Length: 214
Ligand code: DC
Image (tube, rainbow, N blue to C red):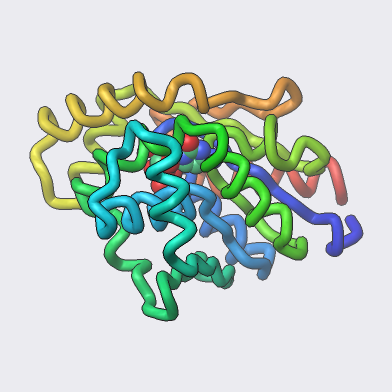
């Protein structure tokens, strides 16, 4: 495969394992890993800082335009800068989680994220909700990961040291809010990861890539 056209898209709901999988696949292929959710999360941080109403598209776009948001892809994942300051570690808080899905519904914000992603030079692995369907329909390798909600809640609770029942309630509320944006590409390979370890999922994705492009 011509590496200058190599794009692997990994979509799926929250805590389906897509970011860990994308990171593992990127590392194995030696190419950068880009998380589209991090751009939505950076926009959410801008909205929080500006005290803007997440439901008001105009106010959201105004808040985003007041800040310089930069995504720097790397093999270990992308780093995000807001006005020159690295905010990568501040994007996975419960507060950002609450603001991010209502703002991700706004078409103008989605257009801004998609434009920013399309400016990136391949090769890369990118994860999100609609990377294979809306942003990179031409990508040669597309995957959609799914996992049982309880399994996803257990994974996320372990990751964050939180209580499973609460995480499950929050995840299902976010699933509902994200539903309209979560679109598998018709030609994506669907993987139910409920009973798979992370290593198995990464190996499966790599095997599919190698099978089609030995
Ligand atoms: O993948 P994540 O959990 O970091 O994504 C954060 C939020 O951004 C999620 O609630 C939905 C939204 N999102 C989206 O709407 N489309 C994407 N391609 C990626 C994320």
